[in-house]
Amino acid sequence: MQLGIIKNIKDLATPLAEEHNLFVVDVEIKTGSGIAEVWILLDSEAGGVNIDHCAEISRELGFLVEAHELFDSKYRLNVSSPGLSRPLSDKRQYKKNEGRVAAVKFKNSSGEYQKIDGVITGVHENIIAITDEDEVEIEIPFDSIVETKIIPVI
Image 1 (cartoon, helix red, strand yellow):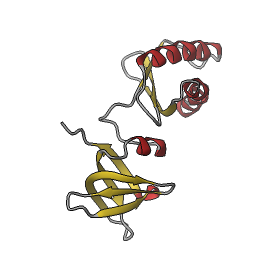
Image 2 (cartoon, one colour):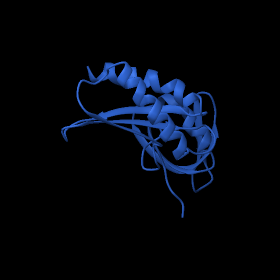
Image 3 (cartoon, helix red, strand yellow):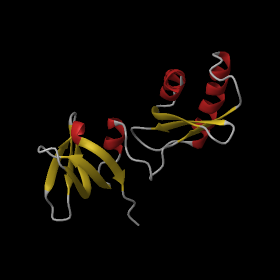
Image 4 (cartoon, one colour):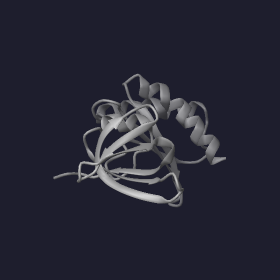
C-alpha cells in the first residue's frame, strides 16, 4: 500500500516541481511516531533549491494529497532539498555536481565492489568520469554505480 501512495505523491509532486525548474529526487514515508511523515526531496539541474519554492510546493501538494484522500489518518508533509549527506540518486544530480569531490562506490567489470574518491570531471549520457588525486581519470557506467556521495571541501 505504501508503494502506491509514494507513486501517487510523486505523480502529484512532479508537475509542481517542474513549474519551478526542479525535479523530484525521492519520496519517503516514515512511520513509527504515531503520525506518518512524508518527505518529498527536490533538486535542480542548475542552482539550488529555494525555500520559498519548497513552501509553495508543500502548500499546493498538501491540497492535492487531501483532494485525492491519500491518507486516512494524520500526516506531516515535508518538502526539502536532499542535502549533502544524502547520496546522489538521479542522473540529473551529477551534472550539477561536476567539478566537486565525490566518493563513488561501484561494481567493476569483475563484479567486485570498488570505491574511488575524486573530482567528477565528466558527465555523459551513460557514464561519469572521476579523476583521483593522482590525476587518473576513471570512467564509470551509471549502471555500475552503487552509491555516490559528495564530499564537502572546506
